[in-house]
Length: 171
Image 1 (cartoon, rainbow, N blue to C red):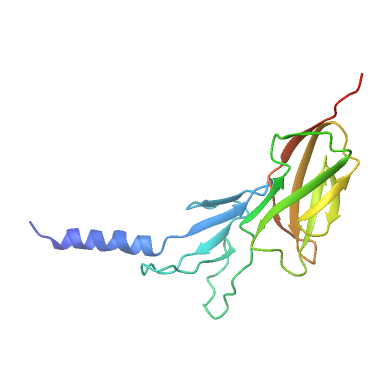
Image 2: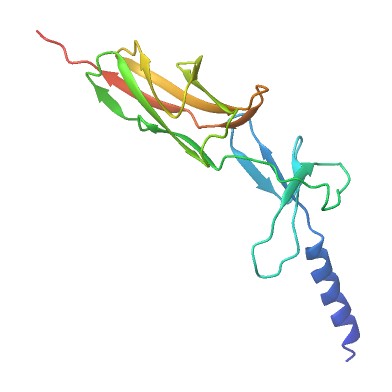
């Protein structure tokens, strides 16, 4: 049995893996997806050669030519943006209409980036990652946060956070 065809096929499979592309996109809920198949609006992730060490990857819109490494500039993104307090599905008692909110964000907020929160669907610009919302009365409430850059472009959106406010009554 001749072994050359087997080595040729093995080399083809290894070469195909070296030229594989991956895609990334963010859906309307702010969730980042990754796939080996194209998706409308997806960006191609250029995977570097595997050397056993961490390699740097970059993204570009699907269908655009592959830039040279000198032209490639790393893009910035937040790995974490979530409402840390109040917790999802938490019930708060007797908050006296003032809600303390804390956001978890990593890496820290960059200069020029702003935080916009949606409290029960109403947008509000806030300063920083810890703030208060006034006039929060009993009932079911929703809170969601976004980071936007200085041009107003959405960078990252948290998942919606539903919580409850209860008020004790005096009879």
